[in-house]
Amino acid sequence: MEKDLIQVLCEITDSETMHKFLSEILTPAEKKDLTLRWELLKRLAEGKSQRTVASELHISLCKITRGAKILKDPSSFCAQALKKGR
Figure 1: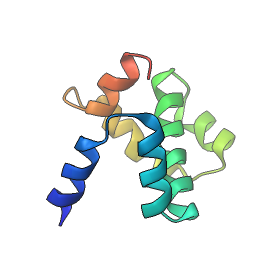
Figure 2 (figure 1 turned 30 degrees about the horizontal axis):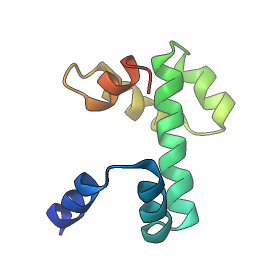
Figure 3 (figure 1 turned 30 degrees about the vertical axis):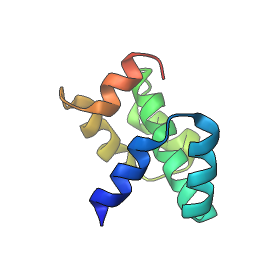
Figure 4 (figure 1 turned 90 degrees about the vertical axis):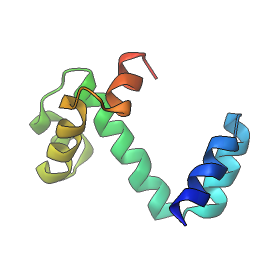
């Protein structure tokens, strides 16, 4: 099942189609969670402290800690994408 979803995501080549697909497949709460997770990763990558990010986004340090671990992993795609300024 996951393979099928990954294949569909890989076939989407423009932001308008991706937006439409994500809007159709995700609930508003799921979209909010995904957007929040990306925002916390961006802020950590900018060098903000975990406590600052937690305070600014009104989320627990547990969520922030997970994001920090992702960014510390040298093979992390998220870390590499954020370094490119996405």
